[in-house]
Length: 156
Image (tube, rainbow, N blue to C red; front, side, top):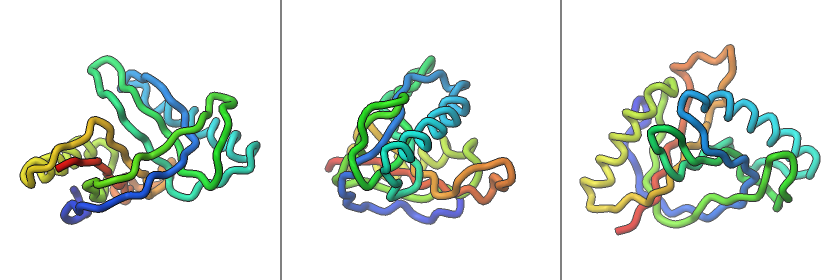
């Protein structure tokens, strides 16, 4: 976890979210994120909902050909389904979390280290996990400065 220190075991409260769901080929993720965040911005504005946390991506299944995920924001009020955006949630409970500092291409290695930490402590990783994008990406942002929180719910 480049620049992020040791993982920590925490207890998270569940969070209401506005999300865009999809099953996306790994090489189409960037386009999915870009179009999803544009739709989210439009619907949050139209429905008067406000983000209460940084953007996230919740991953359910990472098959080789397509990933089942949802991207969105924890929000201050429920949203209705419109314009490709719908209601969602982030689960509460025990989780291991750490911060990855650096480009997105290094996230895989940080996830492997986090999951190794989980296994070394006899914890069982839940199938779903998510990332919180603490630094908003953009064309002028140095990838080395990006900060992404990794969240792995656990049992045990």
